Image (tube, rainbow, N blue to C red):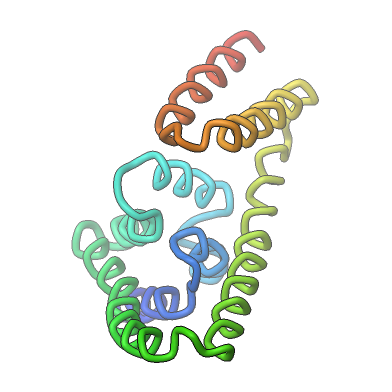
Length: 180
């Protein structure tokens, strides 16, 4: 079983171009395929991974590996996720430096960014919609209001560290939740 998880996380590490959030579609498929976690649990993993130090992809790999096989599982999944990136970045860095002004290189990078963003949106949308599943109208409304407020706060105060936004809206959300 650990071999399968290691290989799955190598695949995730190999194809999740765009950073930690790009792992979400792969993790959603992994959870559905192997039953290690539900979509709701994936949402929790994302929230915990975003609010703890370190890269989100590594945090989520460690979370899944720990759930599957304790600390050994966390080490194996994290290692599986990271190996492809280390190998690829060494190769890509050499090629990019040599061909960074090439029109073809620029087109390839633009398409990789575009595809990565599409994958992230495709993975995030069901997660966002899961926040509203089974919720009362008032809960849906305040959830939507907080999402919008976080978005606009982040846009307006770009230099404000995300941890402050997280703390303020976490406390605000808890306060609203207690009132409802």
